[in-house]
Image (cartoon, one colour):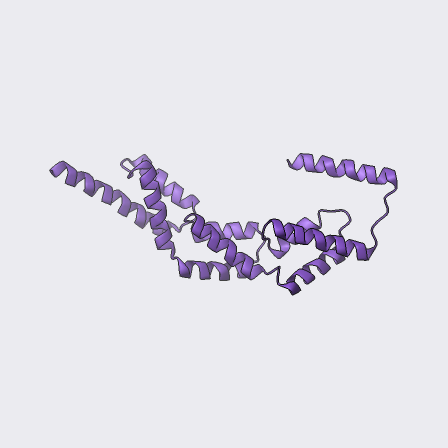
Amino acid sequence: MRRGRQKFKERRKGEEEARGARPLDPEKARERTLQRAVKLLAAKPRSVEELRERLLEKEWADEASVTYALAKLKEYGYLDDERFAFGFASYRVRQRPVGRQRLARDLKTKKVSKETADAALELVYQETPEEELITRAIEKRVRLRGRPATRQETKSLYDHLLRLGFPYDLIIRKVREASSAGSVDEDDAAAD
């Protein structure tokens, strides 16, 4: 996909050079950049830096027009990293249980500053603590695959929870609880 986009850009640039394309005047460049920014935000919410990066992809967009577009969008209230980070994080937690580490990594990928990400994560995990989320994740995994009976199944559950971004100490405690609950149930069934 990326390679196709690159070839398209090269071909288009070659066509413009062949036609003798002249650069846009600054006013048109600002207007065009602002329109592109609005379209990109209409497609999905983005952080300021993520949007800046996408706007600068176009050869007609210069730093001044991008800065102008970002300032206008902030002024209108369409661009706000704090609101974006909180909305993104709370949506992800509602969608499926994930830990703080995974969510912090995802926000970093979205080019949100560390301070903004930390503030958003603090708010999200005040609403829904990681303890509750890891319990939901384990319950879902147990529903799908059953309680871990062997050492390999326990390790698989542990690895799954690590990938979801939960802290090690919480994972170890919860996996032990899940494993011991399964063995108690089996002992009770054998006694009957």
